[in-house]
Structures are given as structure tokens and as C-alpha cells.
Image 1 (cartoon, rainbow, N blue to C red):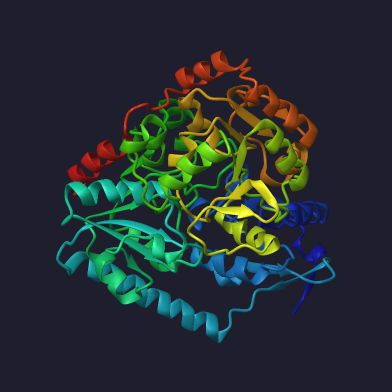
Image 2: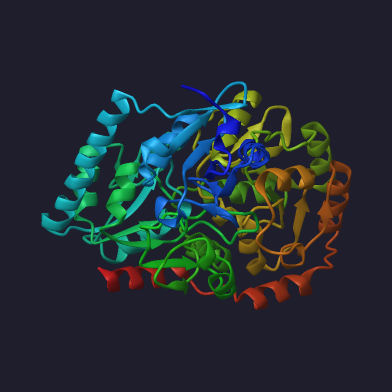
Length: 486
């Protein structure tokens, strides 16, 4: 039965989630006389936000704001230890709340989860130990792929690459020995793993249970400018080590976001290519080096555009491609577009290109513009780029070690920050090149690059020194560390 908000007078409440709807509900409940203790969110961190029942002060109820994911949020609260009879849902008219109804299906799922948890615990304890598992879901990102490659080359009997539900990656580009999309075989290896190596956070129930019983090394995938959720709000997670390419970030940023026993500045395997000559680079899961040579010889120096993903789904990137192609033709340059895997397919479809191609594709009628394959390793190409164009992406930190120009195309700064939240570092510690807000300014900045004008070399050096960015090959050092754990 529904209750009016006035019935919560003098009650101690939490509100979920920590989004605009939740904050609006927080205000309404406070106006109705409730004592709102804070917000509950399964994914977000921040002042006044808790993520687990163990963090809660004594309370009378949790009220979940009306929204499209209200039911999923309630189930997430159950999984994090909150009692079913304490969870209430805001109703359609926004002035009433109703106790959350736990269905038979939910109870069955909860029982299944308990069985899975028990099976994982027993399997990890009793099965003979197997290999070091380099693990990924959805697509295999470059840090895990190259770390596995180094380990497998030096000790082929010790390391296995496992990819689950690979929906965003051309399977043909992966090594033959990769264990992919095979649930029972993968779990046989996972339960026996000596060490798990990741470069993303995977929050599915079964994997979250598994990592409680394993040594986990988190490589992550970049030094962040934008806000991150991390895993610090999962109170039962504490990885063996968190690895990055910056001592400063390991001291000042990552410990507040990720739980780990140690924070190590060993570098990112993907960045090794930025420090190497072409013959030394690992071209695994990258477009062919011969294609890069051909492009440099036939078109000219290359610029690479790598924008970050927009959480609001607006990934149009505000570029007039025809004008951009004309500018590149005049400048004698090729522009390679490398989009986030989540939106590369949409762009490919709009341009009439193959979304599953493993090759560099020229854009139709735009001979100076090229699309780099989705979910593949562009870093061997990035090493030979004359300049990088990005916005808020961590690739800007990576590219600093090349001492080449970076152009920051931030056409939507206010909107981006309103959705994503405040940055983790000041702009003065991120911007080391021209900051442009429209395509005309972008062309002007790139013209300066084409003319060999560079006013930011000292700024790039200052950031490399301040952040103590690793300039040594990362993959061998990570292999040595992981082997010491195994």
C-alpha cells in the first residue's frame, strides 16, 4: 500500500541513487520532515554517499527515486546487504512511496546467487592451481593483451588470455591460443587461477565473487582526467596491486578510487610502443605496419584524433568531415579517427563502412580521413603520429612521453562536466597544448603543427616530471611482478 511523503516525518532515511532524481527526492523528503542521512548508490562515490549496508548509520528506511532503473537499483541494494523490508519506492505521482515488492523470481535468483557463491568458494579452495589468467569482458583492451603477450612469450606454459562475451571486437584479430566465449572452459581456468590480471572493473555477480578468493592485479587503462567510479565503494574488494604509469597518481588519485594493497608505478604495456622504434613494437591486434608506412609515404604525416566517450550518448564530435578533409589535403596530412569501441560501430554504419573490419578504412569520398578499427591497438601508430587531437581522454597523459604536440578539442566542456562531474586534476595539470572549442580553432592549431610551431614543449616536460610518468618498458616489469605473486 502506498504512503504519502508526510508519513516519513521524523524518520531517519537514506535516498537512492545519487543522481538528479535522487537529490530532488532528498529535498522533498527533507521538506516533509524526514531526517535524510545521506544517499546510497551502487556505483558512485562522494561526500554523503554510501554504497553498502555496512556503511549505514541506524535508519528507518531507504527510499528509491522514481526512474527507469528503479527495480534494478532495489535489487542492487539487496545484494549490498540492505533488508528488503526497509526499501521503499517513489511512485509515479512523486508524492507517495510504496514498499519494494520482492517477487518469487527475485527470491529464486537470490538462491541461485548463493549457490554460485558457494560453488566458487569451494572450487577456489579445492581445485588444483592452474595458470595466471589475463581476463577481459566485452572486448580485450590493450594493456591486458600486451601484458599477456609478454608473459606468454617468456613463459608460454604459465599465462592464459581469457575473453568472455566479446561483442565489440573482431575475433579474427586475437591470438589463436586465446580462450574466448566459452563459459565452462573459462570458468574451469578462472577457478584455478593463481593470479587474475585485469585492466577494467567487471561487476557481474559471479566474477565479483571470484575475485574475493584470488590475487588480483589491476592494470587499469589510463591516468584519468575525468571522474571515475573505481571499486572503492565495494567494501569486500581489495586487490593485490594496482598498477599505473605515474607515481604521483598512485599517491594522490588512485588510492581514493581503487582498493589495493600496493600501488606500483610499472607503466602501461600499451605505452611501450611510444618509447620504441617500429621494429621493436608489438603490433598485436593493430593495423598492419605496412599500411602505416604506405600512408606516411603516399599521403604524408599523420594526425590522430582520439576523443573520449560521452556518457549522455551524444558522441557526434562536432566535425564537418568535408571541411576537415579539405584542410588535411591542403596541409598534406592524413587524419586517423580512433573512436571509443562503444560508438565506433555507430559511426561505421553512418559512413557505410564495415564495423567489424580489422583494417584501416578510408572514409568514402574523403581520401585524407581514415577510420582505425574498433577495439584494436592504435599505440604503434600513435608513436609515429605528428600530433594527437583529443579532449578529456587519458591518452593525452600517455602521449606526453613522445614530446609531440597535443591539441585539446573541448567543444562541450560545460556540458561534459555537468554530466561527468568535476575533473580529478586541475586543467593546468592536464592541458599541455592549444585548447580549442570549434573547428575553425582546431584548423588554426593544426596549421601551427604543420608549420612546425610548438610553444608547449616545456609544459609537456613539466607534466612528465611532476607526475613521474614511467619511461621504461612496462610489459617485462609487469610479467616479473605477476610471476612473483604466482
